[in-house]
Image (tube, rainbow, N blue to C red; front, side, top):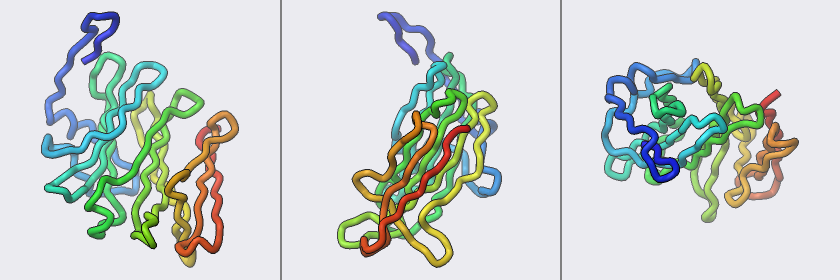
Length: 195
């Protein structure tokens, strides 16, 4: 529903079957179930410059967190797409609390960046989080594969819990800031968000 200037502009209702029909997955990600109407923790809501509404959330089965979904509605409240994400980290620590994730419109006003901070564990009250980043084309409602940063073969760096990301160069690039598990080596990773 949208209310503007004291009047209702529109109200819509989307059947659950439409969510399944419009499910979009990153090309290399398989086995992500569509939202089925069950318990779901609503997260951030993003409104784009053209009025599209992105509602995020995560499955919650009696405190056990699962898939993350984004619901993409156009400026009239009609569902354009549902984007699904299956957690990489599925330990009890990782699934017993909501997964930190953010979505924001890019400086080109044509795409959205979706960042999911997967939790590898906890070290002396510090969450061991590493970012996975995908790009969503707002016009075509298609999602890219997720790119992983910090955690790779032979290396493990985790973002700073207080300031995991800084946007630079007119919000066209992001810098992830963090360190290794014991905070002995600093880590910076610059990521291009738009051309």
